[in-house]
Length: 317
Image (cartoon, rainbow, N blue to C red; front, top):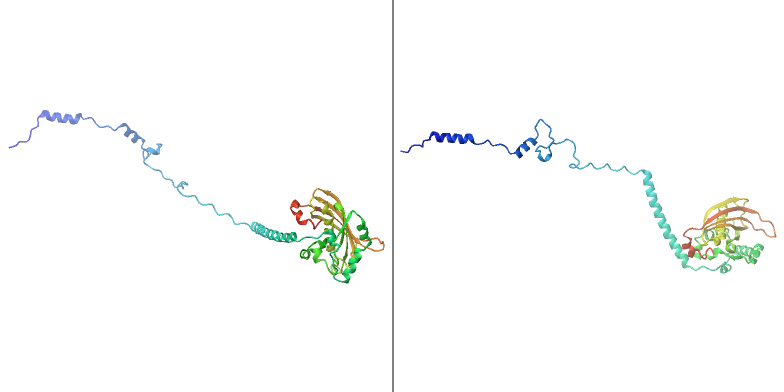
């Protein structure tokens, strides 16, 4: 029969001494550091987040996580700004249309040959007996003969230099010319180098303001055109525009009367030319003329005049 092994006292003491003599396990230094580094629930933590297992949360919005609120839309444009915008578009459209129409007119004008000053003197054919009578009186008037004999003056009838299609669109050569208006094309005598000019004409009864009295605007138009024709030859490129026109009316201009427009270039500075002149009656038999209106004007040659020279050459010369 088997018997359980017996333990000798010596073996018992050796086993107990083995348990009692076993050294106690102690945490490693790295674990102590971790334990010390972990914050107490009652103390704030100053350790780096790298060694902290707790994460603090805030109720404030984090711009790095939540998208920013888009800026408010800009306020609507004011009525003034919209008006300016619409006006600018309208001006651009109008300018484009005007440029296109001008280009067409220029092309048509340049494609049509112009006659010379000498040819204009024989180009007019009177429409009726009244026009023939007026034309002959102006052609043979003593003032016309005097100017024609002066070698410093050149005679022409500028309205007849325009082709028929262009003449119909001109104010003085078309709309204001004809029976009972500017009955016949004026006889114009221009002094060389744009020094002076004399225009002889007859004004009818259909260009009046008050009954029997020529409209003041009609006289202003004649002065503007006559002064320009006088001074253009003195400008570098023979082209200019009216910058200023001052008029003093001295006496009524009666309808169905002969008149003379006299102009003189008094000063020229670069692209500027100053002109003075008047419209007066054209009497016969050596009577003194009556001054109807006096005026002064300033004409300036545009900066683009060099490009327009080919267009206006022949019309203003």
